[in-house]
Length: 359
Image (cartoon, rainbow, N blue to C red):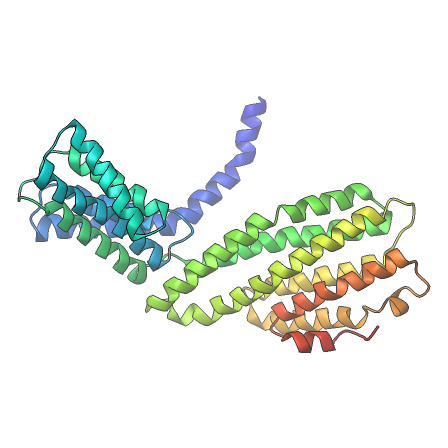
C-alpha cells in the first residue's frame, strides 16, 4: 500500500518529465529519420546503423543542447569509427585487435580533447565497428554514414530546435516557487518566533542550488542555439535578460541563505520581530513580481519599484529604533540582498546602492 501511494504521488512528476522531454524527442526522431533516408536512399547503404546512432547520441536528451556539445559528441563517435576502419585495414579482426582498437582510440581521443565523454564515445563506436560484419561497399562506408549523421544532427539543432525559452522559463518558475515559499516561512518564523519554520526555510534554500544550476545550463544552451538558429534569433534578447536575472538572483540567494542562518540562530528567545517580518514579506512580494516578469517583461518595473520601496526602509534606526544589536544586524544584512535583487531588475550597482538610505 505504501509503495502504491508513493507511485501515485510520483505520477505528476513522471508526466511532467515526459512532457518536458517531447521537444528533444521530436528533434531526435526528425534527425535520425533524415540521416537514415540520406544514407539509405541517397548513398545506397543497406543498413546505415552509424548514420542513425550518431545522430541520436549526438543530440541526446540532456539539458545541454548547445551546437558545440552536439559537435563534440558527433566528432567523438566519428573519430572512433574512422580510426577503427583504418586499424581494420592494418591489423584485421580478432581478440587482441579489439584491445588494440580500444587502446588506440582512447589515447588518440584524449590527445585530441580533455573531454572524457569524447574518448568514451570514440572507443565505444570503435568496438562496435570491430565486432560488426563488414558492410557492402568497402572501407569507410560506416565513416561516411557517421559523417552524415553528425552533420544532420548539427543542422537539425538549428533548423528544428527544442524550446529553449520554454525550458528556461520552466526552470525559472521552479526556482521562484521555492524562493516565494521560503519568504513565507521566514515571515511566519519572525512573527511567531518559530524556529521550526526558520529551519524549514533554510532547508529549502539549501535545495535551491540544483535549481540554479539547471536554469544556468538551460540558459547557456538556449543562448547558444538561438545564436545559430534563424528561427530563434529573435528570442535572444529575452534569453539574455533571463541570464542577467539568473546571475544576480544567484547572488541574492547566497545572501538570503546568510540572512536565513542569522534568523535561525537569532529567534527562539520568545520575542517576535514583526518589523523584520514586514521587510521580508515586502521583499518576497517583490520577488514574486520579478518572477512574473520572466513571462511578462512589463512587470519588471513593478518589481523594481517594490524593491526600491523596501530599500528605502533599510535603516535600522528608522525601522527598529532602539533595537538590540542582533536585530539591527538583521536589517543591515538585508541591504546586499536587496541590491542584488535590484540589479536583477536591470539596475547597475551604483543605481541600486543609491536607493538605500545612509546609515
